[in-house]
Image (tube, one colour):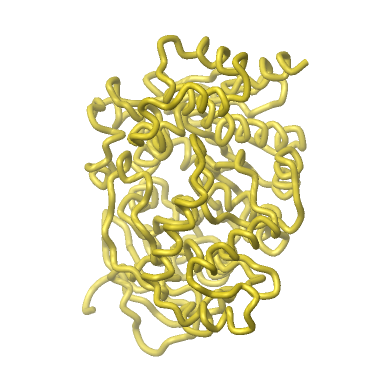
Length: 494
């Protein structure tokens, strides 16, 4: 620790490392370690330290099992530990420039991933955009999202995200960032969690702009009763009586590998044909229909700029490598669509498609694309400045098509970190680089100004409920109308 950039905060000083042309600070604690008696409790403020703290190395990530999307994305191996509440901060320099800040919430269905993974290295965005990029590690699985009233009332994972944002508000100036110009950006579970943060008064005042990529808003959210039933099932898998007076004490004493083993069993027990519902999710205080939930999120976005979208074939990431989806039974397919007429409409949309293709199209519409566009419409109707997109690029021969997570290397511009991602195999390197450059320009323009418009792409109009204009990123870049077919859907319903 004799060289490298130094950041000064009210908690103490940190020495980082120069990486990718920017100053990088790794393993920065934003909360107390959630271990022992702190397990399952909300995030608590971190303690100050004496001397110069080493921030040159990554700290462990949250305990987790392998991702169900390894076949599409590739895998990763990192040390894991409950003491995982840290940030990775990339900045052009820890000076007094007061740059815009991005806080990144990773995806992974609330059970896998980490903000410190190489996939989410924000150094290129920080360098090219002159911004400060902050990746967040938060608690996952049962340790972050187990909920049972009277025993586990807090939602540790959500509290982690709020604590990270509060830490940024208090300390990011020491890294050259402006605490009043914070964009919270997330993908998949991270994007859906942003929706939850927008519903919470204590959270939404901590940021002013929002980027939501592939949020699974069509899943709705667990009610307290639903989450409690899942928690009771989980406790029984651990041989703990949910109603026992010592249930929480016993739960806190169980070693992490056994917690993860039971978590895997819970996920398998809850699996349903052609569904992507995760075992844990943020919990809503009251039952809400999907329109009610989207309206509540839109209300929370009051005064914020919003960039929102999805990929064209989200669910192919889940189904394309699943042997059970290769030749599904006709009756199961029909039951999933609900009617022969609905199945026929999807066949018309994709001539010659396999049953898996059709089921993935249905899941994409239900879970990702339609809800994202409905949310964009609700926000635009309320007067917010909203920009919608659809990502529609894929290698020509890819079984994964334009799937969930395929947009991420284009936004981060770090294809070397994705060398093992089968979803990118066979892609034209030049086309990928040029598409990535255009997308990064848009994301950075939005972070800096609240609008993604820039000289790298055609004019990108604000989303409005009448025309539903949406920027498409793919082999061609340009504005399309109503990509989710909301107008046609409503006409059919009428």
